[in-house]
Every structure is written in C-alpha cells, then in structure tokens.
Length: 418
Ligand SMILES: NC(=O)c1ccc[n+]([C@@H]2O[C@H](COP(=O)([O-])OP(=O)(O)OC[C@H]3O[C@@H](n4cnc5c(N)ncnc54)[C@H](O)[C@@H]3O)[C@@H](O)[C@H]2O)c1
Image 1 (tube, helix red, strand yellow):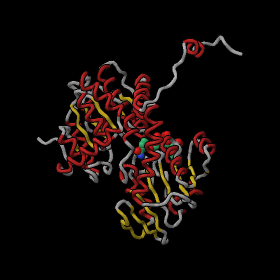
Image 2: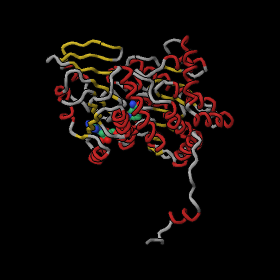
Image 3: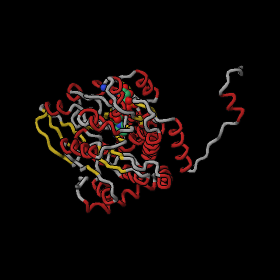
C-alpha cells in the first residue's frame, strides 16, 4: 500500500538540486552522515518525524536513513512544505506525507499516517505529533524509546504535559540546546523573517516603524535585522527582564496599544495567543502590515480581524487585504502562519546544520540509552551541544584557545583571591 502522499512526483529533480544546494552549507550534518553510514547507530529503528518539509529537513532525513533508520515524514505546518523536496525524498525511498496548502483534516491525516508506522522514535516541531500520540493513538506508546522536540512552543506544550503527569515517554528538548536557540531562533528567524516579509511584499525597510511583539530569541534576531536595514524598531514585551534588555539594546519599548498607532509593520514572535488582539487592530494605521513568525497562527487574532472587516481580497499571492468597516486597510501575510516558511524558504541551511546536528545526535543518544531515560522532558546532553559547536567551528576553519592546566585549576578552585 502507498505510504506517502505528496503533490507531484515529477517535481523530484528540482527537489534533488535544492537538497544538494542546502547540503553545501550543512557540513556538520555531512560529517554526522559519513559516520552514521559506517556505524549504523539507528539500525532497525523506526523514526516518525513531523517537521517543516524543506531542503534542510531532507538532509537530516537522509542522514538518519544512512544511519539505518526507517524514517517517515509529515509536515509540521500546512504552509511550509516544499513540494519538490517532498517528491525528491519519496524518490529516495523516504515516505513523505505533506502537501503545501493542505487543509487541517489532511494535516492530521498525514500525522496519523506517519504514526501508523509504529515509531520507536519521534521527531516533532510544535508537538502536534506527540499530542496526537498521547490523545488519539495512545496504543502506540509501548513501542516508543523516546522523542525530540525542535521548537520553543513544542517544548512549552511538552513541559505542560509533563507537569500534568500525562507525559508517557522521554523527550529531549532540542530547542533548548545553546547551539540551537542562540543561532536558529536568533540568526535564523531574524534573517528568514525579514526575507519572507520582503518576498511577500517587496517593501523597503529603511524608514519604516517595525513593531516586534516578543523579545525572546526570535524577537532578538528580527529586531536586530530590521534595525540593520534602517527601520525604527519598537519592542513589546510582558516579561520585565526581556523588556529591560530591549531598552538597553537600543529599542523603544512600550505597550502594544501605544505601538499599534505607530507601526508600519507588526511582527509577532511570542509563542502566545492573541498577542495582537482586536483592541490593537482597531488602533492601527491604514496600510499596516501584519506578519507572524511564532509557531502557530494564533498570535494575531484573525477571527477578530475578520469581525472588523467589510471586504477582503488577495492583493498579492501571500498578502490578504482586509478593508475594515471604518475604511482602513490592514494587510495580513501568509494567513498569519510562520511568515519565514510560508513566504520564504525558512532558515538558511547553515543554521539548520546545527539544529539538525543536535537532532541526529540526540536520536542516536536515545537509541543508545533505550530504556534507561526517565520519562520527562530532558535537556540536550551538554557533550552533544559542545560537540555541535566544535564541529561547526572546525567546518568554518576557526580555531580557538584552550585552557592551560594552570587556568583549569584556577577556574575550579576558591583559594586564590586578591
Ligand atoms: N519562525 C521560525 O522559524 C521559528 C523558529 C524558532 C522558534 N519559533 C517560534 O517562535 C516563537 C518564539 O520563540 P522564542 O524562542 O523567541 O521564544 P521565547 O520564549 O524566547 O520568547 C518569547 C517572548 O515573547 C514574550 N511574550 C509572551 N507573550 C507575549 C505577549 N502577549 N506580548 C508580548 N510579548 C510576549 C515572552 O515574554 C518572551 O520573552 C515560538 O512559538 C517558537 O516556537 C519560530
């Protein structure tokens, strides 16, 4: 029986070239792939992965396959699939269940199909796969060795599940590795969000007032890149330390209800619901652009936007114009879904190299430690995090200093002072 569902198999040659291009910028995954090919650490292991189906994910999937895994993929977002990449993976013997633009019913059907493979390991991005496993497919849990989670929102959901006593197998929070969030969330989301919005709108950033909602790691990157392009950046936050950091990083900080009147472009990256709510939409200028780069399409209150709307049309492929009852027009990008993936190509491969190196090494770690890990949300083992940084520096041809024995001793003792 066919165990994949993609848009069009004939797109495979284009997808292959795209995967090859990404591989050039993924030397760490490349090294892990070479080692996995020899050592086969995932031999006999079934992996079900719910990830954005992009050329970078393809390089991870091919690495896991070389490591001996039987891997199957579905999408972690209905709008982020690169259909040519999906076709290329299928032609390489990796079943993919993902079609760009799929509706919610198809999205969950695809999740269920990859679960039908009875995985030993899960890879998730946002925790939709793990949530489906825990709710509707709980009979599969006995097969599971463990899982990994790629993003902040997924980790938040899994920690809530753990706290409620409901988590049924160990999961490693890949997002929380330093070599993940400090680079992927900050530099990856920073660049790709600006890129996605530019591709969707072709706006000039210089001189625009850009309001970034949420000064987490993604917010840091987006604000930095918008500032670099000449925008005036306003940050909105709910957490005082992060708000203070934004002030000292040189941004204006204020409540969103005040920023709402000033912004030309609003970008949410809070991981929170209704970060932009009806009251803010009511205060915005005619022509304001709204984009979300947080995981789910709940950050901008779209039902509230619709309730204020008189008429709506698609003015560019990924730009919806909402003409409000009072005559103002607001522009929502990519239906409020992750703008960097829906309107662009997601993060550059060089940064996904590190995120996916963490994924590959954590899956190997879980397979090695089968049955020995507590059922909880685990951090990425420090040795893996450091190894990824070391491999990336090596690949970039950068050497660093090492502690002398005297310095090692000094840094682990208390006796020496003034
Ligand atoms: N677009 C991408 O490719 C991509 C990449 C990585 C992470 N993400 C997603 O982006 C989101 C943010 O990730 P992060 O790593 O920056 O998280 P984070 O936890 O570091 O930052 C989120 C920030 O938003 C703030 N916040 C929460 N509610 C708010 C509100 N109502 N108004 C203003 N600020 C609010 C929090 O205080 C926090 O500082 C998550 O959903 C994550 O899964 C997206």
